[in-house]
Length: 417
Image (cartoon, rainbow, N blue to C red; front, side):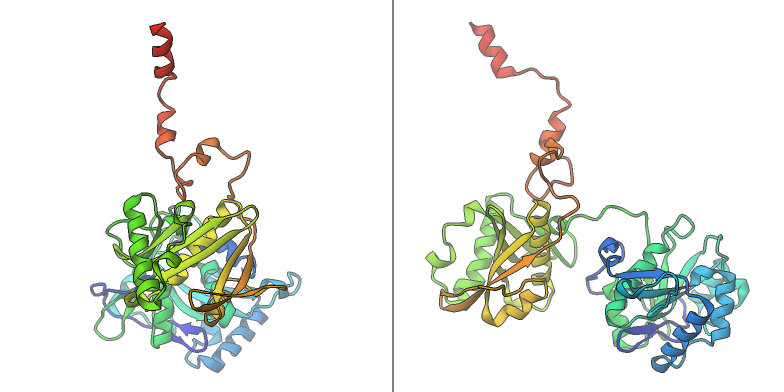
């Protein structure tokens, strides 16, 4: 088989010798950083029963005619039942009569199988049993054999990969092939790196020890690649924000200075979006009694072919939710209502239209789920005194707790009396 993707599906196939990794785009949904708990609210994965497996293979063959024969898939599952997992929408799932809407199939390769994969001698259409690892054997590599996941089911791929993180599979690398641009885009989106080979490219995802991902609003690391976001923390950061908004709003939209810099910048939280180490966009958040206002989203023209605007908005929503806000409010330019709708904002009943700085706007509102780590009364007091957006790691005042209580200024005053 060869890796295909058609209307949201792909299938994986044969390989050659691994070559050097090529430069790829920054993954938008890196497997190591996906919040599978969110995806699990809508999808479930499970081992398909024989009849369900037969139906799924038949359905998939309509779009993917080069799928391995059913008896080959059954033989692979007999060696390792974890090789095929079905995906279903949670609201339709019936545990008494489970039926999948899609599936992910993998070949659990032993050392011989992985070597054959890398040299191009593995027959993925009929893999030899001698090259497959059993259910309780640690494989040398996991080959993404086939994926059939239409539209919303695509998120189930990450649930399957997360399930393959038990002690037996933890740290085992994934491999796949793409025979269509859509399949290649999906793999790079998930964080796979393409390795050039003699004929078709082999995609590789290295799985190291699982580490806690940085929050969306604190993802920037100097020297890193791709898009990232950080909270503005000092005057130099605020200068970056001013420069970015001057370039976008004053230069491009002819907004007067006193209207763009409206007196609210020193009472707000600012996010800066980076492409590599270059400041490329920003977002402002102001906090009120029972809602937070998302505003002043700006991305430099030369970086609008990235997904930085999406990263900034998602980071702003996440930061507000961590601070305990569930209602996010904004004024959307009418031409951009569709953009804001992607994040869950809607024009609510009674929403007013308004005009300022020569553009027409409408009120929009997003009502978010409570954040599981929302900061409130009863939280660790050291968390509350950490820098804005750095609540997830110890700060300067945390480290000062190791010093003895000396009250130096008070004790000096008392001693002088």
